Image 1 (tube, rainbow, N blue to C red):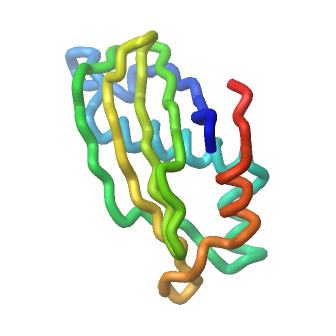
Image 2: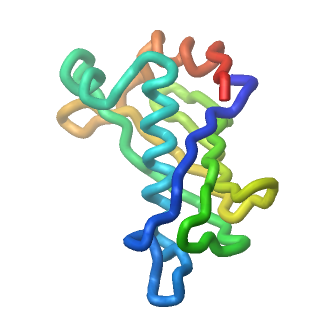
Image 3: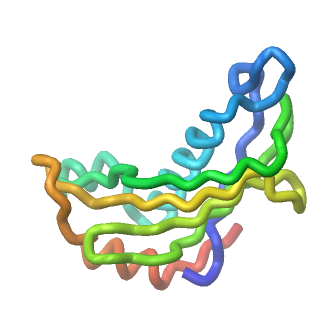
Length: 137
């Protein structure tokens, strides 16, 4: 994928602590929402993959670097890029940004598993979609 997928998120009161700063675990939620929207943008969704292909993507690993806080009412952009597609995994790089500043950088590894919890190959159609899709942000 040459162009990162971009997803906008507004920081709501429920996302913050008593000081109006985004609670650290909510960045994982923001990143998850962006990954789901990226999957939709390439023509797939979690429910269809589970029902039709018998697979789901689960988080295996997350590396998160918190550089600066987001605050109540900030408008954020989550930029998601595919770093690598393995046999049964996809590695994504996600940056949560406010304007031109990166607030949080994530690197996540998702594993494709079957309904019985065993790793399976990333479907060819999904692999091709991620490799060739140009996102119009």
